Length: 141
Figure 1 (cartoon, rainbow, N blue to C red):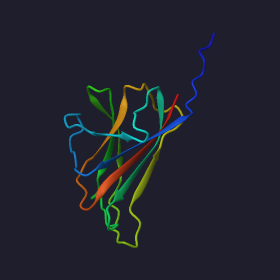
Figure 2: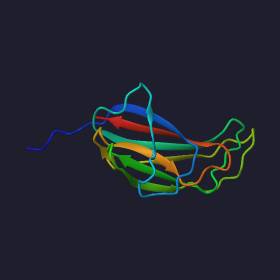
Figure 3: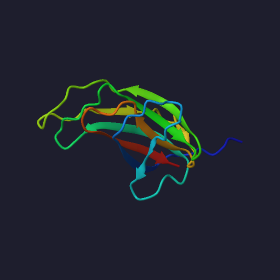
């Protein structure tokens, strides 16, 4: 008899802001965890759907200085590096230019996690201006 299928259909959104570069990729420096809209982290198994990273500041001139975005998973004890993405070095904008935005999509069921393992983030270099804002979209079972 086959196991019952699991449907990931309860969306949840988390966010964080990265302001300081973290060169270490061995888990020795704590990555930044998410704050969850609605006040609570996932309470059931979930599937990572999308991560949106934005270079932002109030003047529209954020620049990531050729940073790497690192996505971690953390069981509450040990952060482990899951993926790294080269965000490049977009031109410095101005108040008439939109900030750099990168969308990282995950295939269905590519990354399914139990609720005690949560995504966290670091940026490899401190932005030369502005911050990196992260929005993380998941679907819970």
